[in-house]
Image 1 (cartoon, rainbow, N blue to C red):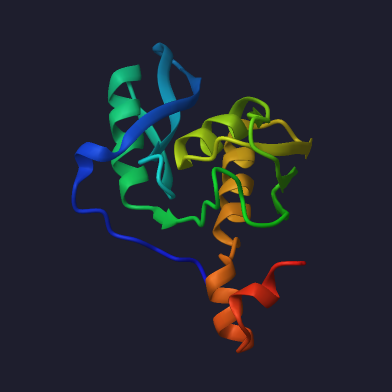
Image 2 (cartoon, rainbow, N blue to C red):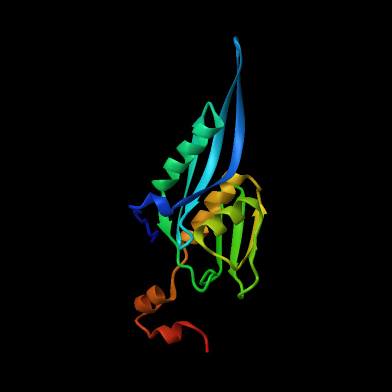
Length: 169
């Protein structure tokens, strides 16, 4: 059901750092620091991906995260700057609820969810995160909710009805 997509032109994808985590390994010789960065890439027109990069330096971890994100792209239906319908998803302890909003509302979402929604090109949305606030799980739950979105044209085609019957009124 997920619409995986291949983007040939990487120039249009913009990356955004969601969170960076410093990990310490204590050994006999002392402490070793490594960094884990979760990165979101999107073109602002409905294509988005996320990736996790781990390295000894922050810049290398971000670069690895961007490369991983480009391999994990999906297409999300964006309808007049908002999502076509409500979506609920969970990943680990994180639960997210995404609802469409009227024009001019803006992106009403917190931290990790905001980065994902803005990268995909959504300008008006109401979003709530419940449960865990772990940015890794929040990004994955938001990504899952967006991946399960269906555009009205596909719904009408699957049901075998006219596009106007999908919308109320």
